[in-house]
Length: 337
Ligand code: TRP
Image 1 (cartoon, protein in one colour):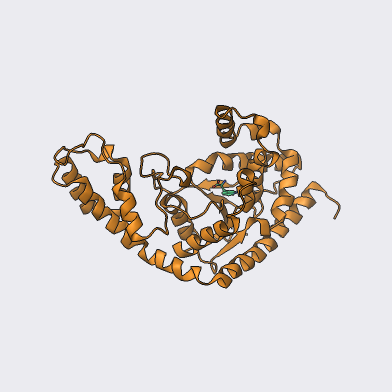
Image 2: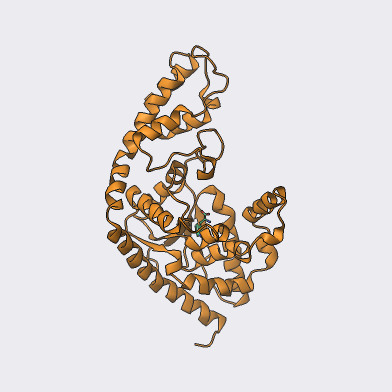
């Protein structure tokens, strides 16, 4: 057992092309982690249905876009198992078992659901419009994770509460069936702080404030022109403060060398460099960094058969491990075998 690699699993909803928040918050971490762990990365298409069940026209394209962003960023199908959630039906089977032992009020405590409930209330919508599937979403996520008896879950900070619930449910399963079958998995976070959108709010596709991995150099430049900077630095010769310039400065923290950061900081606080020049330099660094990734993405996009192959082969591999874990769980429950 000891020389076996530890397992990790993580997923993303197919919401379309990924942005730099995904890249620095999660993807970069995955790329590194896949070297060390037995890794399962999946596209969570069932999770997408929990909220978008009536907007499925982009599903196919979205799945493809996520896969392209992953592969271009360096998730390697020879090192990791890349699969589509709905191609691994053992997920749904495990979900059933877990749903039996999960107290309803544990799910109600889930912060994401609480947020949703609040949004619905604000929109004067009734909580009973919350679908059964959406309500059970944290349990489905638990099934995704326990399906490989994973040790770690590399996610963004926004998902940590879900992993806590997963640990609770794993422990409960073990208690109920007097066993230690499921590992209690732990979240594995990146060190990089959450990147904000260009307007200073949470970065997200729906807020129209994000930069995509796949945006061209020109679009990236254009988008950055609109990025907010230090609001107190109104004129070019006003002295600025990088700490009040969260968006642009946060990117410098990622992309700048120590020397560059010092130079930028001095230029800002001494008003010897304008925001436009600062952004221009930053954008060049971002574009240089993403150029090979964007190029690879374009190449891959031409080969639909290859993309299908990756998903089919990865899902086949995932099903084998998932079946093994499911069989074990059914044995522990004492299902008729
Ligand atoms: N909930 C995650 C998100 O919204 C996606 C997800 C679903 C996930 N199942 C998972 C992440 C299991 C990690 C592990 O982004």
